[in-house]
Image (cartoon, rainbow, N blue to C red; front, side, top):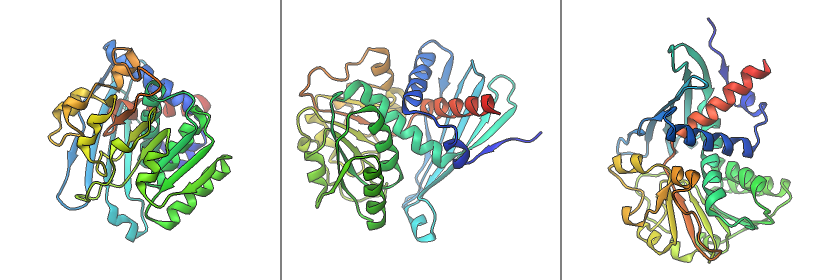
Length: 311
């Protein structure tokens, strides 16, 4: 038996739309509510240096898929000429345990993460959002830009980052999408000038926070992709709505993303309609998240199903 390995090129060739990704995530969340999908809290190892190790497990029936994603984040990989995040997704049949496929974890992580943000934005952002802001200009910034450009009538992009090569690549990508890209001198300028804000500052094991939610303009939505590492976490209390990806997972984690009193609900609540994502045009909202195993399962299952259909 040969177990197929789908690398990034194979996964890109599936030509999944952002709408398909978001719909798959929402269908998986509804399946969990109906008792047909299950997920375990994320397991993490933080050795105390700059590394962050993580494993996520989720399964569904119909199709019978189980996905385990394992990744290691290490900022020092850049000096080695490697991506900072590397990993794999292993898929099994959730009934028989038979191995089904191995997927490139880097692509799954990038697209899944943007898909989770896009799912939250569907419920929390203003539909007329025209300016997208990015603090951090790496892989996650590009995947989020692709997602939001498909979902919203974007006109302009503002950005702030550390590495010139990443900033140049990000600006070129935005321009290729027909958007006006403007570099900012400070991260605060980006926060204050964005309808949709994405922060993807790499987890570095102790860098001082420098972002304040109080700087977000009325009506803005923030996708906080980076474990809130660059944020003054108490500042989330000024926002009208804050959601996390999974309340059960968040309660199980020792290091909290933010003060639990500032959290209004989670992604499942947004999708199922039990959490209000936005009550007025002026509401300032944020989705602060770690990455949910249901998102990995939803995207991995979508990819494997499409791949098998096209064989």
